[in-house]
Length: 327
Image 1 (cartoon, helix red, strand yellow):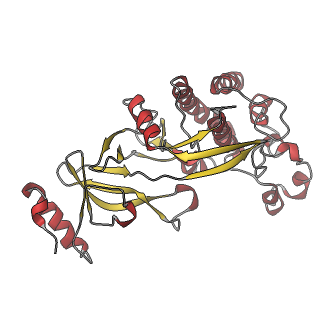
Image 2 (cartoon, one colour):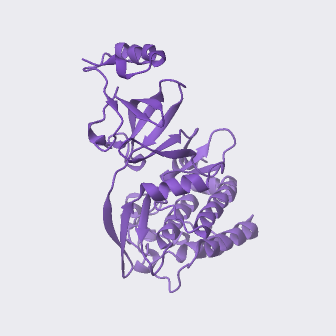
Image 3 (cartoon, one colour):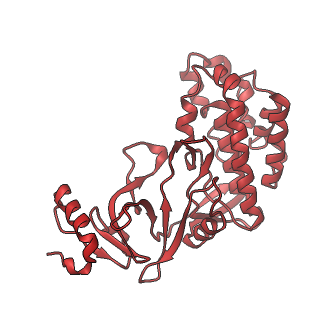
């Protein structure tokens, strides 16, 4: 049986009401130590920073659809006192390696780095907002405001009836807003911090005024030879998607009657991504009307490049010039 005396009297009606409505298979548990996050379940209460946060769901990995497994270290919560809804990120350590050209990159989750980013960007509309605090066991818990918006890629998919219409009527505005996001990453780098996991589904579009918002900063990477390279390649991948309105793999061309063998035969290894060679960066071979000023930026991220960007500032300056020249 649940010991209701563990909770303050003024929040009991909301908690008991939730239990009754949800017909819980068991009574909620109170967690002051979140180390064992895999056992924190729906209807449990996380007590941190003198707040009682009722777990009402979990976030999911955005890129892979509704069937993706929930992220148990990132529950959605309801504050039983203020009635505010938040996302909570619990401590979860993970490490893996990837190849970047001839270099091996160690990637890992760092709650401490994410807490520093959140602190630095407080009040900056280009970043998700929140704060970090410690639970009773010293775990660094991040309590985040829910972004009022939708993923950038879902917004872009809806723009225009064709790629040409998207290119002529929407892309210039999309790139101007993206430039603000790029400048925000340059600001992080100027303070010795990285985003760590730049992807198109880690940018949300604010529902009120349409500005772009970065989310998820808990990944970091160790690459002393090129300390900001992974952020740069992430920005290149996002730009590729924004210009093309989708990503193209060589095999996709053969399946698409609009392109087919004629376009496929023009693609060479040098047109593919430098890192994984899993997507086409030379978009001019697919859409010849893409201007050189934009396509040349993409080619810096292709396997055929002889020169790579060293800093986000360089990438940002080239994109600024391209947008000004074309539009």
